[in-house]
Image 1 (tube, one colour):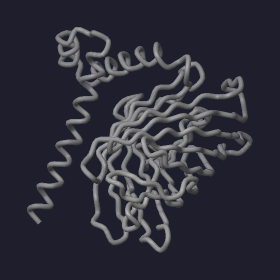
Image 2 (cartoon, one colour):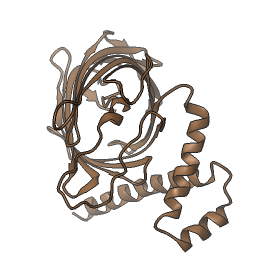
Image 3 (cartoon, one colour):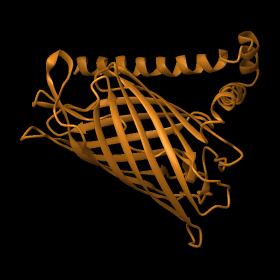
Length: 316
């Protein structure tokens, strides 16, 4: 019991170190005077630091990303193997789009780095909004191609989306393109097929917090073992652009593990004007403008799942 307790404390310390590093980077990235930032935060700790972080991050993003993408999501994660992961995901409309458009054709690209492997994802995305309903809905479909380097594992996926003020849901099915390849140390590796299904809802009276449940099923090849289970997540907004996620993964036949993620989301404010939400509300759930969700990145598993040596499925 004591070992488990101290193990959780160690993981939490690493997670909050990630938060500290990300905050530190944002404060210094624009050559801000650190002493002045500190004085402002002491004078008004509630708002000053948040505003400084948003200002610095958004100014840098606007300079470097606006000409390429409408929305960019950058992730830093601590996975179940106690390893750091990083990814950057970009979404951009393929045709002219404004806040009055009822449908969108988009392109999404991403690069993920984990365990010294690099995964490139490219996909076509279609979304349509039905605003004639009392509670408008966005529904969409997407098709992706994934390739991992240096071993060049490849797969494709087909996904469906449903978005509203109260729930976001995604289902994705992944199929291998490549067959068995020689991986590290000459061990056979093969891409597995699988399905993920997730749904997220805001917390009652606390719209800045979300609860998310994901079901996953990765099928082993040639009679190999499958990876089946659920992941339960708490997602919260640190600021307008910063998100944190704490998750517990429960895989059949495996110990429960905790996962941690910090995300920075850049979006072109001229196209994606989101409703500013309070921390607490008088109503359990509030109706918001869902049109900005037309420009969100697609939620999917960007890391290619592989069967290693015919024995286990490597999930990260």
